[in-house]
Length: 77
Image (cartoon, rainbow, N blue to C red; front, top):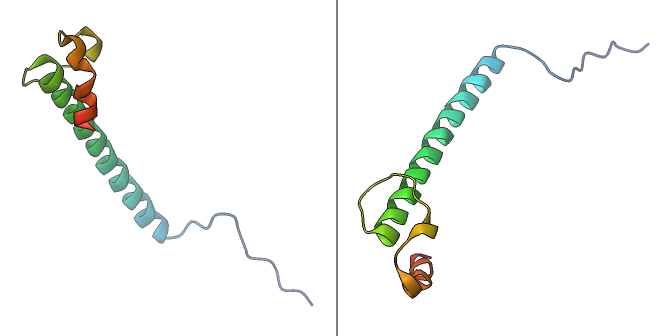
């Protein structure tokens, strides 16, 4: 005689709420980290290419460094 198969693809029990809460916390922390990294990228782009202390989104293509634009990313790396 065979026992009934009780396996499922997804078992919803009390631990599911803890896993969902942990996933939400990881998502929020990842979002904050991504925002902070973007702000740092903008800050260092403005410092090294435009000599201004700002986090405004500027493209390095509009710089006035001339040929100095070549070693700036190399030194930054």
